[in-house]
Image (cartoon, rainbow, N blue to C red; front, side, top):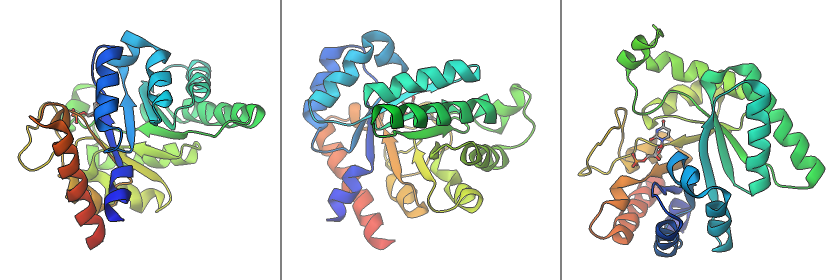
Length: 245
Ligand SMILES: O=c1ccn([C@@H]2O[C@H](COP(=O)(O)O)[C@@H](O)[C@H]2O)c(=O)[nH]1
């Protein structure tokens, strides 16, 4: 029971460069993860066809294109994500309240008009590859631990359903936005895994114990000698943490 609950919370980052490879990963991991995340690399290469492929195999999609543009452009792009039938999609919270509100409003209007389910609209707070130094470089003097709850509150007030953040900030986000606001966490690394370019990380067990709703994990699974076994081990670690909560 806990294993199934944990499995549904695991999102595999399909960071590959062809439809054929994506199809192989979907076949291998379909029964082992809850969603497949399609990001900029795969979508730029394959376009909407990859979303259709995953859905036709019975999988669900987190479309991780992190829209960041003027409000009308982001709103209309988000409507196209809705029409693709994705379960989750996202924008950058740094685009501001007006941009996020335009996306949230337009998606809800279009979903109601077309009778489509509303995807979970997420706002990326501060990328998990960033640190306080990264923020200072771009002129933001407030530290990550202040910026993330600030952006999460802005996202909630603009009508977003949740945020993307490091598991290190879950407690801060819960305090700012409450229990019903979804928190999706990349920057998750099993104890022995390579950190790669991630800076603010936690283990799967620690992320679940902190209250993450979903974990996004790519390379620790994709680069494992036995990716299916790696996914199983992560789900088992998450399930044990869920049982202990
Ligand atoms: O802050 C963020 C937002 C998105 N991502 C994406 O998640 C995956 C993580 O992959 P790993 O291989 O497990 O590092 C990747 O697709 C990123 O684009 C993120 O890492 N951090």
